[in-house]
Length: 217
Image (cartoon, rainbow, N blue to C red; front, side, top):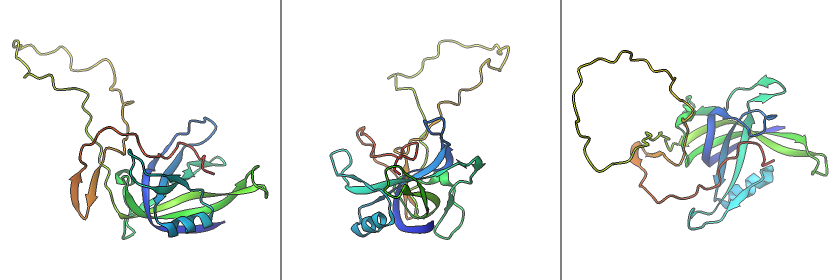
């Protein structure tokens, strides 16, 4: 068992605020983050550590070539709840994990441990837990206001007046909160203190996203 600090890592799909539920009912929810690099020296160092990298080759949808790996932290281990990964800024001050967006650069703390593995000649494999993230360059994630309605092409006409008060201002049903969701593709990038909205682009498929469970190890 040992600790590792990976410096100047580009991170994507950070789930560092609330753990995401696994699609397997017998597995606990997990925090996660995807680490990316196109630096050959980083690739060698990460592989030497035992990180199982995958590769993305540039294409028309995602014109960058890079290597990536998803790292996790389970919210419950052996029946005991665990705290979320630490998130701090470049001065070591606490940073709200909800504002960390795709493309941020960070120093990432990992804990290496051994786990039983039937495919390993020794009977054990190497895995990593994400313990903390220090963001050194922030791409700020800002949720985009939701609007389900389109422009009908005309101003709303006034068809009458009413001076009657409604009998009750209460509604029978509670508001539906199930529609809340997070799209990391819809974000505003913050560069050296200047907020620049992303330019609109044609719909594209997402690059590899962090899966909901630990299938990289």
